[in-house]
Length: 381
Image 1 (cartoon, helix red, strand yellow):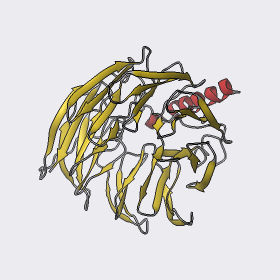
Image 2 (cartoon, helix red, strand yellow):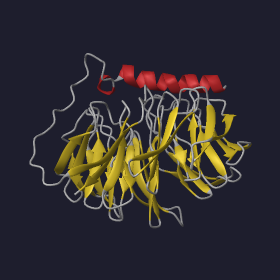
Image 3 (tube, helix red, strand yellow):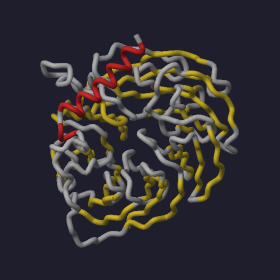
Image 4 (cartoon, one colour):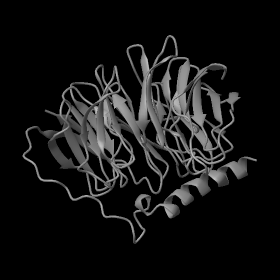
């Protein structure tokens, strides 16, 4: 049954690429990416530091940021902790990896291509334990005080004891027959992990015992065929104040009141990479590579930046005065938060920035990891 599920996941990805030339950059019929537009920069993207991590191969590696430390992994099995641009330690899992690192500042965890989770001491990089997951894993683990939580490609979620790697629990729920292959991680805070599922569902799990706490419907699958009915949650959910928001592929963007579970607003949207938000605005990169700003209280449109069509724009990250995204050629684009106009642009390297930028401590700082393995921290000003 697990093998069949994994095959269906792969079939969904292949079908989407082969059935729609606009999603397949190697198709001779695929439209060309938009050329970079010229503009007069009125801000600066200053490189704070740069470290070589290692190639991502055909996988997506999200760096984990814990206070001033960045934990970054690569396909060759390497893992490193970087503090303010200084490499504190390097370690290896002894096997190729399929997803980025997760950490809580005490333990750092990665998952191998063979489906084994490996935990390291975050202070010195010493291996602490390893345990089998029993399935392919594309998403970075979530690490809490009690458990290392791993989401497999077949959508099973497993909790391992953070101290010794014992399997504590497994959570499973019914999912649609077709789903996108997703590298999206989990939103974790203490005892709770919030996970986006195929079918437009957000589910909260107790990380101590794996018990489901609540479920919210972001989007409802529509259409006749299974491909048309794909409505997977894109990226991780975002929380601000008492609200939680998420967006689905071929679905909707929805914000909920965390206390009541009631939808505050919902509107048609499709995204494959996800969203970010601050106290006033929600930022979404849609399936056509346009970046949108929506009013966080009503969902109404504030601005749209559509000059990066087919450049495979990343999930946005919200800064104090700007919004930052990466693209398929390694460019980092800085947009004005209030208008969406281009403010600055720089290049991390010549390879794609697939994982969304991650915020760093301090005003308007963030880090990106490229497919070829550059880990670069920037400050916008």
